[in-house]
Image 1 (tube, one colour):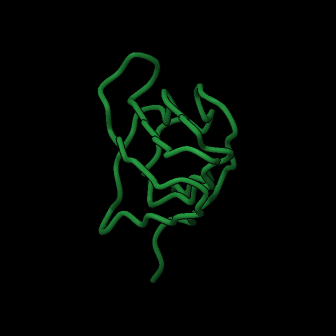
Image 2 (tube, one colour):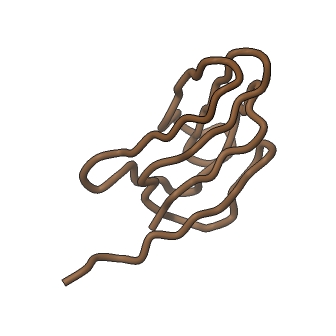
Length: 90
């Protein structure tokens, strides 16, 4: 038996992803010329749930084990030197 379907959304700026409560299962980022940083919080001004740095001019994939990170509202609060991030959630 399978669990919930995993969905994906591509984001190019900060703000709410607009999917409501969800579990982040992973993400894929493309960075620009400088080192990148991605910060996801529990809504605008909420607790930090994910804060990770990336090298310059790369594409990286991060998969979160088990049930992922439960978030009340997936909010991208920092997208530094990242061209785009695709967030996988369910």
